[in-house]
Length: 194
Image (cartoon, rainbow, N blue to C red; front, side, top):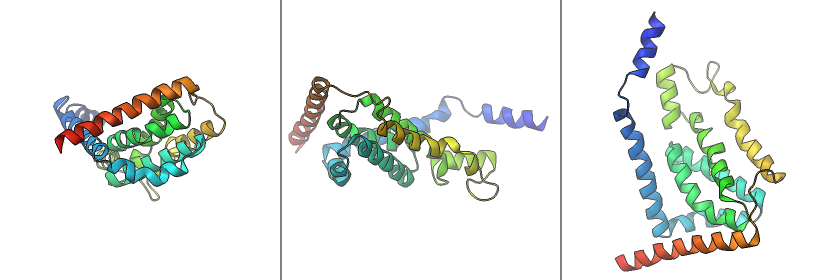
């Protein structure tokens, strides 16, 4: 009966109120990303990677790399998804990759690798709740095949152009105009504030 007590304890710890912390982290990530975009910091930070990302495969690879790095630094998958999603939107459209493919890349890497970082939100939760380590002889890393196969499969999909939601020239021009209009609106708001 000890197991039932432990399960009951896990399931009855606050409901919606306990999710407020997660919601605040998401909103903070949105605000931080908006500030970085508005100040032009985001574009400058990812500029070296954008010069490298001139093909479909390189665009997916650099997005995966950026998600991994941001997640390793921040420890929260929400921030990496918002940050990289905003930064790589233009790159994907330039390479005629549909935005659903960007969303899938964010999911393939951002969510699946979150449990690999012991200092991150998911890793800390697993260690504290389940009482297991991530790495080492008794760690759960060896069972995380999804965490290291998803990024590899995403790259293979890009290599073989499977499910990349390729854009036509008209769709690319329309999306690029929308993105540039958004950027122009952000810059004009920033100029009004100055």
